[in-house]
Length: 292
Ligand code: SF4
Image: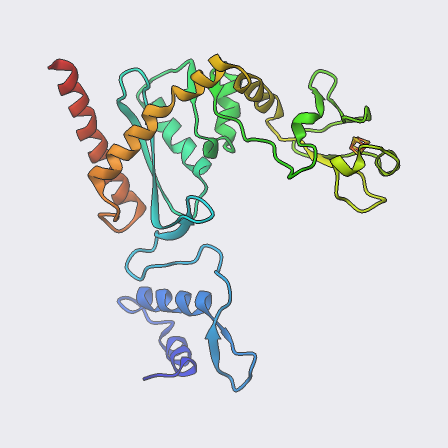
């Protein structure tokens, strides 16, 4: 067996080699760089790196696969699938595949470009929250498309949540439950005056910051849209509107059953082909059902 040092030396010697060794050596070098670090115990040895390297490659054969998370407890190794579904016909109109470590919203421009290529125009889009971080959402809103998405619940433990503050998006100000008003900037946090917060009788219910620091509230880049969504979510009819998106989850579950849990191919491109193939079959089944 070769020691790590010897292996590194071999890679250095063979490094400039041309094909066919160049590509596998680069893969080997990447694995060593991302997963090994000098042993602080000395002796010139190496040890397994603590933590996970950014954009860590997880497969020798497939350079696109990555670790990702669906939630804090649910991990995914490989890819994420994304679909855009027409809520009327339930047909899948666009598909995207991304390495599992990419956030959902990075798939949205790909889905949108597939929809545009078919010259399809919508007046209303229902999104999963994960896609709301994409600039494409704001572009659609500016074009007059109605954006619908269950808003994030503002939480702050036992302390006042953001919903207790009055946001005036005409005057671009925020007023706290204690009556203090501050100007806001979209995409930035606003901090209330330390003097006001230090002497405020509501302080224990509002902030756990040390004396001398005022309460902060973050203002989203798309705060106007988020405020509209929070207002919709307060009504029964609004909540019913959000539930109209449920068929997309059914579509995803159905396609997941068809494709199985393992990626069929190596690379994002080939797995996108596989997802489109599965979506086409699903669409043909819809046509058949409707014709019966
Ligand atoms: S602690 Fe500060 S932000 Fe909170 S209610 Fe009092 S003055 Fe307003």
